[in-house]
Image (cartoon, rainbow, N blue to C red; front, side, top):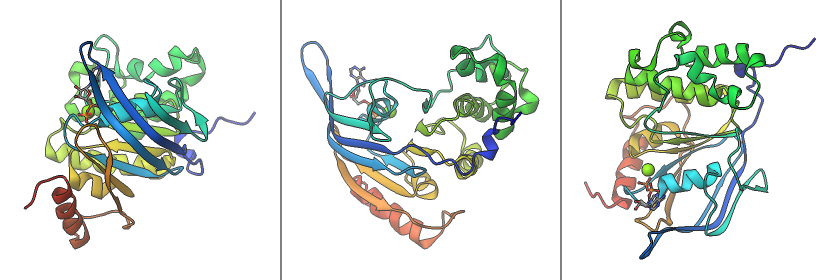
Amino acid sequence: MVAAATLAERSTQTGLAVDLHAVSHQYDLGKSILPVLDGIDLKVAPGEFVALLGPSGCGKSTLLRLAAGLETPARGEVLADGVTVTKPDPSRVLVFQDPTLFPWRTVRDNVAIGPQARGVLAASGARIDDALKLVKLESFANVFPHQLSGGMAQRAALARALVNDPELLLLDEPLGRLDSLTRLSMQQELLALWQRAGYSVMLVTHDVEEALLLAQRVIVLSERPARVKAEIVADRPYPRHRDDPWIVDKRREILEILGFAE
Ligand code: ADP
Ligand code: MG
């Protein structure tokens, strides 16, 4: 019998190709229509790490929800590996800023939610252990969420996403509520996990430096309704350092694009 590949062994696996083609979206507020996205063209190559920056309320979370298939665009198309996205799929996983762990379930049982929902819980024991190991929570498997620090809770949420073997990880300001030191170590972990697993990443962050430290490409969005305002290719080797003159320069450039002249 051939053993199932563990998450860590899947380094040759490539991620999902994402193609947002002329995507516009709006919300019906009853008395009025709120245009949120305006003709977004954005491609993510298999295994690419793309960061999205933009003013608060411009439509970043909406864009991730469209990529996840939680909503369908008013106009345009979202393609995953060339196929139109019409509904959520375990291959595309969204991780939110607030980990939203179930308080009455242990860490392990929270991580098990995906396999359980898909009816494959019994066969997924090793995979769940693996996901916990990847985020270094194996010794906290049996504790409850209230016993975790903010960083650990966010790692548990990551494990819950990784256990589904995503081909596309959609991260919506996942480190936004963490203290700055935890944030630094989580940035390293996100990078290491991505380098190991090879999935594609779309990371929404409000931290310009974080975008430049992690992503291969940084997309800057305009005020709502969001359009792609700028695209910065960050083909710098990892690990990157915040005091690298290139990062310092690009950070200033992006802040200017966002309207914060220094
Ligand atoms: P961001 O993540 O960039 O802050 P969002 O995508 O969350 O922006 O929201 C964009 C705009 O759409 C905001 O003005 C928000 O209030 C509005 N919005 C988001 N979701 C909904 C919804 N389900 N119904 C109505 N308006 C929404
Ligand atoms: Mg948001």
